[in-house]
Length: 257
Image (cartoon, rainbow, N blue to C red; front, side):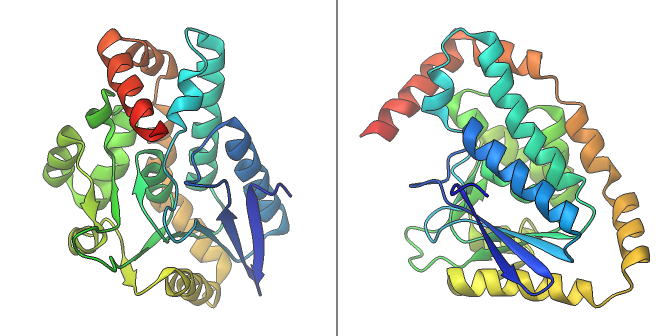
């Protein structure tokens, strides 16, 4: 399997660890590697999948400088966004439980992937003045959040609270995320975060699997349906708007510093 995704076996549970330094930004190659790793786990019929990152960042979301490098090439932009949503849909429709071990920050696309998982564990902030954060911060960089993605947030924390966070493009601390149910549990460090995610998956593996999986499929049907509603052509139209491009270029300049 690709060096971009490390595969670690934990008995009947498999961990997929994102390994694209420094922040696991999602470009076409990482999305393809992750999709391949997920399909391999599905084919092996593992009992559960843990998705993890590094101790600083779970995933920084889509690789904005990479996407900006496509310029006005609409086909390339479409292919990149389609690759990302293919991963999100694979997570949403996984036949077995998937736990996100949020070992670091999870903005934008990183948060989307986490929301497509069954269970989310996040590392506590070691320094409260510089907390680990999670959120859909798209409006902060000039992007509208499609309804299908908004649905993922609404189903977890409720409509009103989701509206407040989405419109503001707010990033919130791990501790606040736990208070409002955006994450299910907190752990003291990255290793403990992965261990907690694995423990949840292993507990799920002790239940009768046929009824568990059928019940999950019914309960999570709305997630896949929401992702299917995302219109990539409409999203790319928004991406190419002058004010959005200006905000994205400013963000890319900050990242280069």
